[in-house]
Image (spheres, rainbow, N blue to C red):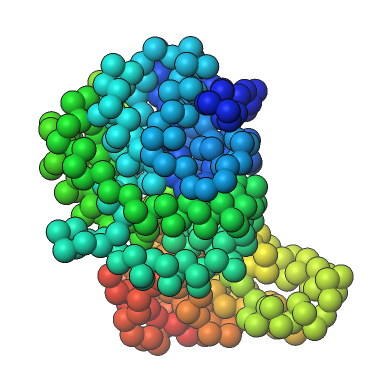
Length: 444
């Protein structure tokens, strides 16, 4: 198990750039972050730590914070791509690296492209994930968002950035996890001040490295998730056609953040491209029925009751849910604020447990909603699960009414012959999930 290394500093002109070196593999990889980073706080995010450890298992991984962000020196004015190239050179020199592969992520992709074309002698390869050659719409670049729309949406989001709200766009598969939301908000608060965020955003609107693409001569891998909500995949697809010999791989998933969702699938592609080998992933995948519960109108109830009484109510609710889980062979995964995530090895048991839960909490003076979906989940560590099935169950639960057990069409089809009756709720769009989904309410 790789642990957090010591943070060091490289001198780039008059500035100090924070960096870390993780692992001791045979090739150097420098991770070029997107908008905001913090080389120490990232170690508080389990999904990000998993990404770092996988990358460091086959490389000597170099992490750094861009000037003006994280633990690097603050700056006045937005850094240019040339400034940021200087920072990469300084970090590589300080880390004792002669040549490295650049792993550019999101907003880090344009600088990585420019660096690879300018310094091919320092660059072994480029891996470009979730990125773009131009940041905004143009007549000959139709898949990007117009600058005016980006500015408008950023103004709407700005008051909530430091609360972790951007996770809904950057990593929607984690957006229902309060701990992940809190960690993302903390990373934003410590990663960049409001003034620095604004400067960096305005600078981002002017980025356009399209003329550089045909000049890249180093081996290049371009990766993008099909359902990425932050950056249109067509930008990466087109970019790969403009870089001589580049390989384009489109991956399943809805997350923009590399560490969210099926990060192992992303890293497998990176490892094979850089080393020529693809290892068998150690993560276990199983079929399970996922249950999400949460209290109806919880925000108002918590405000009326006060912290102490609300905490007592949550303890009583969780105890009631656990009793029903024990009856129906459910496995508690974790509590989520006023709700719970659990899994079952059979969909019929999950439905019956959900119905029992809605009755068990009534004496407490609350109503809960329950969402169920059956699909393949990833077993993460000893006590957590992840994957698109978890995200779908959460979205189904969010649409359930008071004391209602709402299930996906998959669950309903799997319990045919069980005697469980359903009321159809029609086709619905699930936020952040492709396609439309048939939903059904289990009847008592």
